[in-house]
Image (cartoon, rainbow, N blue to C red; front, side, top):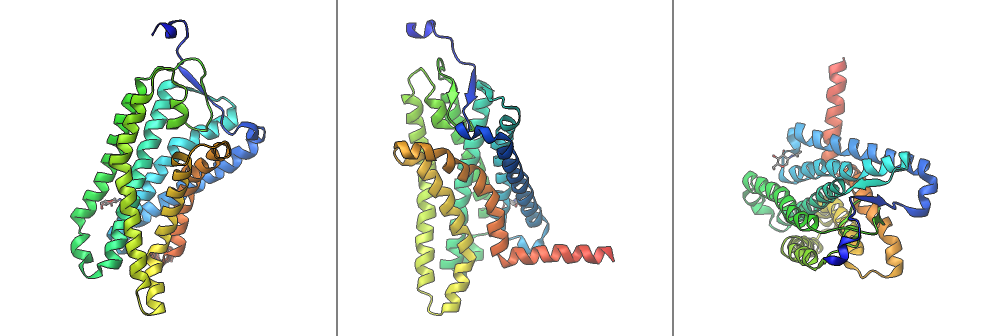
Length: 314
Ligand SMILES: *[C@@H]1O[C@H](CO)[C@@H](O)[C@H](O)[C@H]1NC(C)=O
């Protein structure tokens, strides 16, 4: 402890953001602003559509509605601060603010993992056990899966944040990232971080890893079932009900694994921010697009909204 005494503790961090790209801050501000507006609007529209259209009151759409709702919170936990630093060039963030952002972003990302695995399980039952679908995926199980996803995501990360908040930060205070993420913050601590890392490893292996395995296993069963369907049209039809979900899962997990799991070589370090943009900014943006453009039921629901509106006008 003596070594710490003559160093001042950090109460404020500095985002390094996108480094050299900062020169183009006005263009970046506009691009991210447009992305933010579209992400918000797309996800809010999907949530409202699912809540209001009776035809979409099935487990798959309840999960999708909850996912879209989550994405609106998720982008709001990260993007407004990024936008503000492009515009004002003020890149400081107080320690409590940073911990709050880490808590929100990490909890929502964990909840998203749980949702994706619940959705995979739902598709697995629909495709591999179609005759039992309505019995297994009843309202009670659906509600339980949704509630458990939210609760576990937040409880896990509250435990983690309690440990992170006990760390002492001093000396260097530059976060080499565009938001307060776990690894960049931990690197700035001048106290021992082994305990926090152990807690993270335990939480990841108890909570996140099983949901990942469940997601992968469901998809292995889904794909092998689809491949065994004799007719080409039947195969196409079965595939179309889960292909959008497969795309979303692959992009989300693919980029998360690149950022958090792969060893940090020099080249990957540079690319980490780019991949972080993928899962923090682009996944929430494209999710509503993927689901609504590829999905006939969602398209029909839009058509119903539009035609109802026309009738009201007459
Ligand atoms: C979220 O899931 C619950 C439980 O199935 C459902 O009642 C609720 O309507 C869903 N919310 C949205 C926004 O779709």
